Image 1 (cartoon, rainbow, N blue to C red):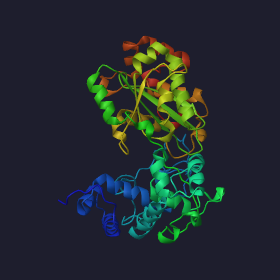
Image 2 (image 1 turned 180 degrees about the horizontal axis):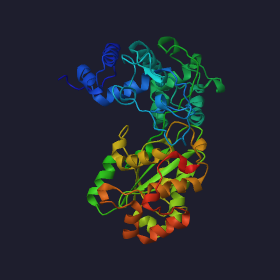
Image 3 (image 1 turned 135 degrees about the vertical axis):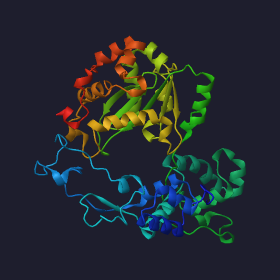
Image 4 (image 1 turned 30 degrees about the vertical axis):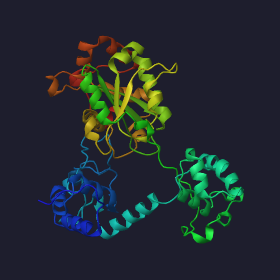
Length: 423
């Protein structure tokens, strides 16, 4: 078996091997072993760089279109609608090239080509390394110190040594001046004393591109979460995420109480840090401050930018602490896998095939209806008990709070997990 190397980027030759593997129907694991990479690396490469080469002409990708008795007027509410899932396209290897039924298939097709994947990878790599790690506020702050110093005849080395608070080395100051960062103040590279003796970078169009601030992750990584759980195993955990079908919304902020297997969710028209913080505030308002501190002492979520306002979610308006927020590792959704499994149940009613609004999810009232049915499903791991039954047994006051909000328990034989629930 080839040694796994997770640290190097894929090369064109390795991408050609991936393409050949897909052509011959090899699994992601088999391809990964061949090129000496982790199978998740291969999976992400195919998902990221495959190209859609054909779009399904049917209104929906229904598994039973060949035997359809409804004239193929596909809609979510059709009692015979079963979403089509292709083992090769949607699972492993993840692309359609090499499929024996490719020419006759009427469903959406994706193709992976090594040459095109390499070009797209190189373009992204160049874009990621271009631009200056600055925004307008940073430029103003630097100019207040650097511009007067240069006009006084000081060298970039002099400035860097005398002003460590700038966080800039000598070379960085040279590059900023040469790049025209301080052109607004009429400071150009000609003003540098050593300009003619120093090799400066080629001039490019000036572009500011502030790097993403990840300071909110400090002391909130998944390893920090594990340490807290090891030290205080009695603390309850709520997992949090968002799901949506279109970038234009709507967005569903989901919360799963692990102790009770109970799913709660809030409807949002947008997906901002303010929306997510308001969602946490709303949850606290529904169940009460005391219950929130007892049942939501730890919030585990992913690193989506909408969840970056950790301190706002952790504290109330009066700055009192109410919970602690932790973040899963990148590309590690399994670290909150319990919530991901409940998302699968939501998708029975809210499949990804079309707009949530088209499905009928237009407000919180409709979302409460979905939650009512999802939380009334018995689970084998709880010996046939539903999340509602578990919640009533352990915390009847929470059941009352959620019922007042509009989430009701549904008789087991009346539970509906189909899109027509919202019609």
